[in-house]
Every structure is written in structure tokens, then in C-alpha cells.
Amino acid sequence: MMRKTVFAGACLGLTAACALPPKGVSTQDIAAYEAAVASVGCEMVTEADYLPVEFQTGLTRQQVLDITAYKLSSGGAERLADGGVKLTTGACA
Image (cartoon, rainbow, N blue to C red; front, side):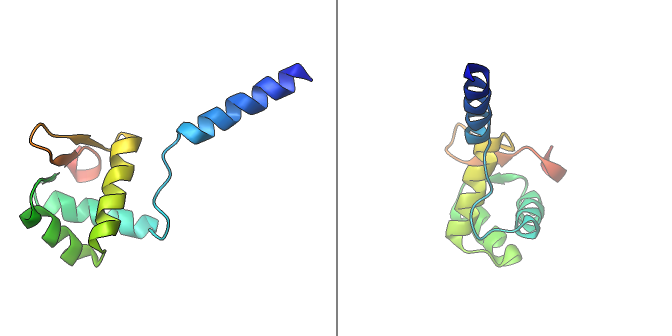
């Protein structure tokens, strides 16, 4: 009985540690986001970087921010010293 409890706890811990895509965002939205970020040089720092990503994908600013947070938590992006974000997957790898 103790082994099952420890195993179940370990599985839940692993599941909680995995980053989940934002609600209401499809895999197609994430692919479009990656392509749009690549088109602006793989980095988003200023409004001039975020606006084209929103325009190309049809996503709202909040959705772009949510996908960016997902990418950061899943290791698909990294924070830049200037406060921006650099995508490190797909065409930006």
C-alpha cells in the first residue's frame, strides 16, 4: 500500500511540474506564434516586436503573453537581460 501511495505522489509531482499550454490556445496557435516570432528575429522586447506577432497570428496580446509564459516555463524560450524574451525552439533554435 505504501508503494502505491509513493508512486501516485511521484506521478502527480511530475505532472504538476510539466508546463501546460494556455487554455483556449490550440497547437496551431502555438505554431503560428512560433512562426511569427521567428519573422521578427526570434526576440520580443518592445511593442514593435509584439504587434507583428499579434497581427500575423490573430491572437490577442494576452494570448501572446500567455504563450510566451508557457514557452518560458517549458524551456522553449529564455529571458533576455533587457527584459525581453528570446524563443529557442523551432526556426529560432
